[in-house]
Image 1 (cartoon, rainbow, N blue to C red):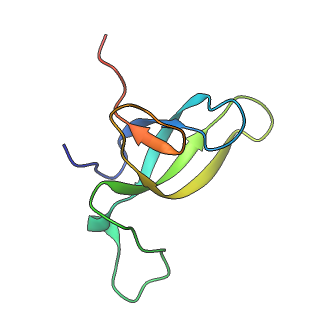
Image 2 (cartoon, one colour):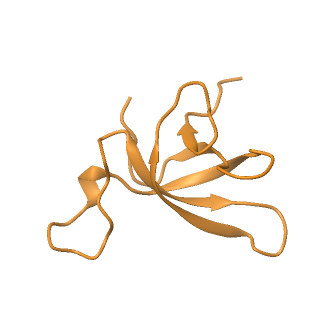
Length: 82
């Protein structure tokens, strides 16, 4: 399933303890306007994210993040169904 704007996903951090965090898809290939100022994406399964984190920072952007079903560091995945 391709990501869409506004969907909640899981992001696993690139650095440190690789903690999973909730994130919102802030841009997909379908949302990029030619000639605009948004960084390009490498594929339909790469997204720009706004990642939510506990603490003072609260949130931060991550750009051109690839999908990974296994949830490797520096990737996004769909939340597990429970």
